[in-house]
Amino acid sequence: MNIIGIDFSILYPGICISKDFKEFKWIGIANNKITKKDTRLMEDLALTYPNLKLHSLGERPKKVEQYHINERNKLENYIKLTDFIITELKKHTTLTDNIIAIEGISFGSSGNSLVDISQATGIIKSKLLTLTDSIQKIFVFSPSELKNAIGCKGNASKIDVYNKFKDDPVIEKAKQSDLYKLLNQDEGVIFNGKNVKSPYMDMVDSYLPIVKIYNILKNNK
Image (cartoon, rainbow, N blue to C red):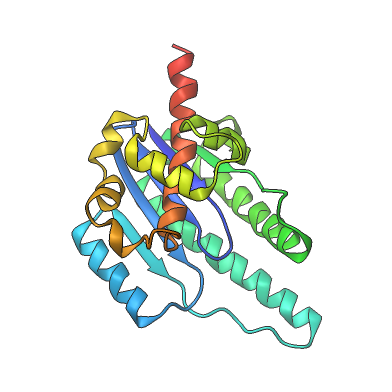
């Protein structure tokens, strides 16, 4: 059984793929142009931690004066991003054996940000249906539910979640994963004491839906 956890965003989506809660792979995506320094970091970490797949999709179109062009550019970018995600997931999963869990939209976003993420999330949800043989295998969880799943309060900060994963990821086998090793062996390259570089924090967040499904199955035994 493949369990796919998705922390979807327009700029830095993170994906975790677990095989029977025993093996873990991550996909981190930068949907923008990144610096040469960050590119080298991605490449170096991918060599050291081969189960962390890191990708940059390049620069997005710049905003212009015409509204209709901006909206078309956004749509093209959402399609490019979501197509890339689906293509990557198909490399690691099989159609009939996938459970997919994605974080729901945070309504703490406001204005155009909420509209944009809502549009892009609708596109990825539609495409995720192609990765499973039943809509019953797709789950959408609220952000607070996912934080609770790993043992944090619903209003916990990202650093709280980061530290909880680093100290106790709940699923014992996750302690053998490359992301857990990165946080405990090379933390300094992604965390400056205040902020965690993207998409590494997003990869941590993508693990939370995995834990949520794990808890549900465990409690139903």
